[in-house]
Amino acid sequence: MARGLAWILVALTAGLFFLSTPSQGADRPEVDLALVLAVDISNSMDPEEQALQREGFVAAFRSGAVHDAIRKGTLGRISVVYMEWAGAAMQQVVVPWTLIESSADALAFADRLAAQPIRRGPRTSISGAIDYAMLLLDGSNAEPMRQVIDISGDGANNQGRPVTMARDEALARGVIINGLPIMLKRGGYWDIENLDLYFRDCVIGGPGAFMVPVREREHFAEAIRIKLVREIANLSEPLVRPAQAAGPSEPRMGCFAGEIQSDRWWRN
Image (cartoon, rainbow, N blue to C red; front, side, top):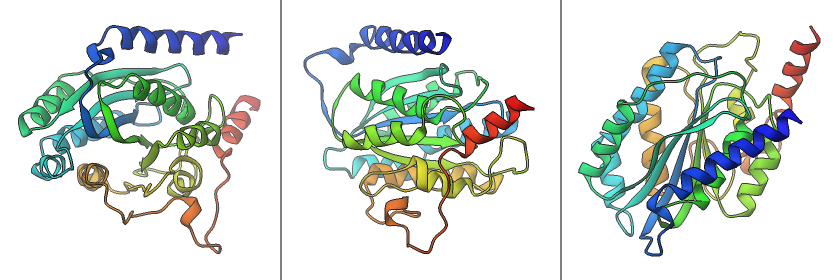
C-alpha cells in the first residue's frame, strides 16, 4: 500500500511540474535531441564522488567540444533536463527542460546546475529513474528527432519494479538508454562485481546505445564529456555495446543482482 502511494505521489509531482512549465505550448521547437540526464544520488556514493559527478556535468556543458557537437547537429539545438534519483520514490528535477542552441545557452545551463545543492537519498531504483525520465520526455519543451536517457549510477537496482521492465518499455517507445556505471570503489555491501556488465545487460539499450565506465576519479569529468559529445553527435560506434550486440561467449549478468543483495540484507 505504501509503495503504491509513493508511486502516486511521484506521478502527481511530475504532473504538477509539467503543468508549471511553458513546455506544454503548441509551438514546440524541433531539436536534434531531447536528453534526460538521470544522475544517481544514492547514499552508496560518498560526498566526494557526488561532487565529482556534479562538477563533471558542469564542466561538460562549459566544454567547447560539447558546444561544437550541439552546433554541428542537423538543427543545431538540443533540449536537456537534469534530474537526480535514488530510491523508487525519490526523483527530483534539478534543472528543468532547457533549450540549448548556443555556447551562451550551454554556459547558462552549467551555471544554473552549479548553483544547486547536492542531495543524497537511500536505496537505488534504476527502474524508477527510467520511469520518471519517461514522464519527463512526455513533458519535453521540444519536438525531438531523438530521445535519450543518460543513466549514471554506482549500483544495481534494489528497489522498485525490475529494471528490465522499465528499460524494455522505454525501448519499445523508441527511446535510447545510455549508461555511466561508476566503479570508483568496490567492496561495499551494496556493490556488485562487474557493474559495467550489469549496465550492459540490464540497463542500456536501443540503436547505438553505449556506456562509458568510470574507474578512476581523475577520469570522471572526461568520461562525462566524452559521453555527452557522443550522445549529442549521435556517433554510430559505441564504446561498449549493449547485451544484444555482445558476443555469445561473453559473460552475462543477472538482472536481479541488486534485489538479491537487498533481500539478503533484510534477512540478516
